Image 1 (spheres, one colour):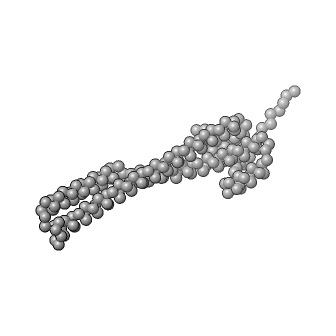
Image 2 (cartoon, one colour; image 1 turned 90 degrees about the vertical axis):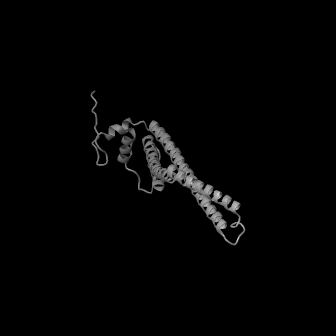
Image 3 (cartoon, one colour; image 1 turned 90 degrees about the horizontal axis):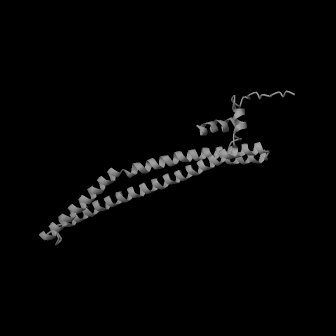
Length: 190
């Protein structure tokens, strides 16, 4: 007997050829890859957050030291110039004070130049921006993972209503269309 092949007509939600893709998808392998990718993105996001915090704190430390040295230099020069004190009358103490003011001023200038050269504030901003972008990618991967879990349960005959309610609770949407799942699948495959 000759068997007739029944072709599915593409629905409005499904682009042509997607039904074939749905039948050939290895959901468990794809789920493992998405899980690994999610973990990599989460680790990278955390590294970027920590790097931004490190650069911010180091930049603040250099900035604070620079301000402190400038303040100390100003205080020493004011004490040395005060006419009513014994410090202003003794020439050896005056020379010693001028040397210290010069050293502190040089250190302050060095820290300013070092801070400008290392540009840690800009690096902190770049890492923070990368962490925000990775958070968006992480969110999309998490949504894709939930959709994939729903699709796997649907293929295995699981409880669709419970999964759909969980999806609605987690994503805040009224479910995710299958074409979204497979359009993201095509993007991940590339």
